[in-house]
Image (cartoon, rainbow, N blue to C red):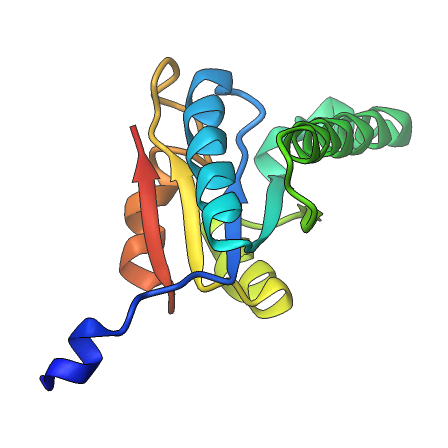
Length: 153
């Protein structure tokens, strides 16, 4: 390791924040951290949530309007975070809503290639240990993601 590379600052340009609609406390902490970093680095912030197949029960899957309601609810939740980020002074915020598959696989195989983040911020489970995207996803993403992952507690 040479001295020049150690002295060079590590700067993030594209930060991906994962949002779990079921864990607002975890989301709030991760959101605050992500907008602080995005502001400090003048980075683009991508805010993502994923509608998992598990989020749709068998009865809902037979009713197209129920599935569409879930899609709309998820999009509205992400849009609300985007609005709050913009109200906090961020100018480069992108809403990202994906559907289907396992959360970590969707992030690794679809979201990361599409958004191209250099940092992922996710919350740690606080209230609901069964919550899918926050606590459980952090360690899996940290092991498998090609970029740095920060789990905010």
